[in-house]
Amino acid sequence: MKDMIFNFLYDSTAATTPLMVLESLAVACALALVVFVTYRVTFSGVVYSARFNISLVMLTLISTVVMNIIANSVALSLGMVGALSIVRFRTAVKDPRDTAYIFWAISIGLGTGSQSYYIVAIGTIMIAVLTVLFSFGIQGDDKYLIIVRGEIDTMDLNEVRAILFASYRAGKLRAETVTGSYVEVVYQVKLRRDSDVTSYEKLHAVKGVSYVNLVSQSGETLG
Image (tube, rainbow, N blue to C red; front, top):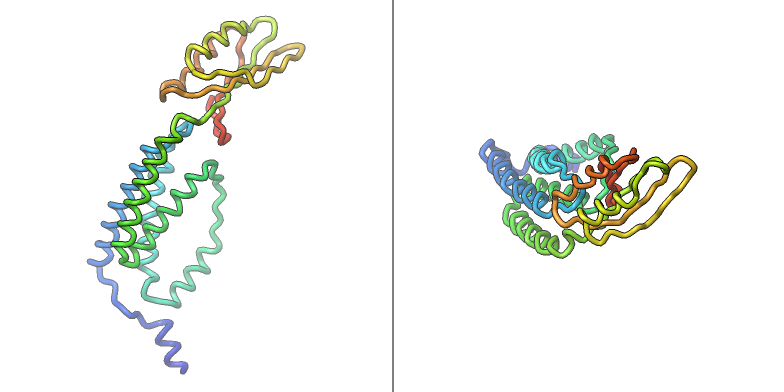
C-alpha cells in the first residue's frame, strides 16, 4: 500500500520532452497574442495600459511553464500550491473586465500546459469573438466627469462652458461649489473620439483656472 501511494505521488506517468514544452509554449504564445489584440481592440477606458496588456502575455506563458512543471507529479503540484499561496497581489484592478482577462490568460496557460490544445484554442476564439462583438455595444457609452477649479474672482465660467460644449457631447453640470476664494464645477461628458481625452487640457489656458481633472466612472483619473 505504501509503495502504491509512493508511486502515485512521485512517479511521472508521462515524460515531458523538450519538444512538448516548446510546442505548448508556441501554442500559448499564439493564443496570448489573441488575448493581446482583443484587449487592445475592445479597450474603452481613459488610459490604455500597454504594460498590463503585455503582462497578460507573460502570465499566459508563465502559467504554461508552471503546468509543464507540475503536470506529471501530484506531489510537486501540491507543493507548488503551497508555495504560491504565499504570493499576495496588491495591485487594485479597477475594471472587472481586467480581472476577466487575467483569468482568461491563466486558463490558456493551464490548457496549453496540459496539452489540451483543442479545448483552449476553441474557447479562446469564441471568447475573443464574443468580446469584440459585445464591445461594439458598450464602447463610447462610458461617461466621464471633468472637474474644474479656479479663483472665484478671475475664472471665466462662460469660457469654460464654451470649451466643454465645443469639445464634448452631452455635457451636463453635475455639481458646483463656491467658497470665498474659489469655485469648482463638475461636468459630465461623453467622449466622441480618442482625441477628446486630451481636449480637457484646453481648460488650463482659461484665465483663473488652477485645477482640471478628468475622471472615469471606474474611478480612473487623468490630469
